[in-house]
Image (cartoon, helix red, strand yellow):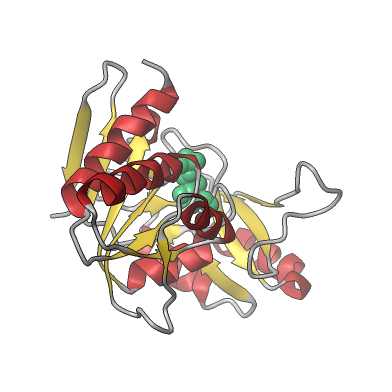
Length: 235
Ligand SMILES: O=C[C@H](O)[C@H](O)[C@H](O)COP(=O)(O)O
């Protein structure tokens, strides 16, 4: 089974277990979520479900349009029943690193408005501690004019290295859906109290949001190499 198939089985399982008629559904971002939207579209079609979809990114909005799903927004649907989203890493305490694809801010806002945040991922995202597998660091979305002082403050406070994320098909930095930059903090060890780290980084002026999702995830599904799906629930 390929990694893509592992993502797909996790996504299908989550949509089948958590999407119900008349629900308000938060649509996450990234490559795994594509399978969740495909499965949702199938179920809406076959079961005639009524589901309103609130996107977490421009990509998610495009997916909602592509599959002819009903688009909602926080102005009209501020209380979301369930959000299904991907993650770059999930630790044994259900802390997440998100934002590898640059979409963390709207994802965290939507997750904070959701009764349940469900993560879907392939088996490579399943870790004991953050940093075991994901080596690209913790994404931090920042106001562009402040990226240098924020970079310096994070390394002074916690060590490691901080890199401004560069775009691939564009010269210069990645610009998020919100017009901001992304810093990736390559933390020096994995013995941090992530809740404390998250709070301290968020208090640096110019930081908009971090990719640390602490105490937000209700359940995670990991597609396995042999085609099964393992689950982890929050305590
Ligand atoms: O910025 C991107 C999001 O946080 C994604 O949900 C995360 O990077 C996981 O993406 P993928 O499903 O492509 O591994």
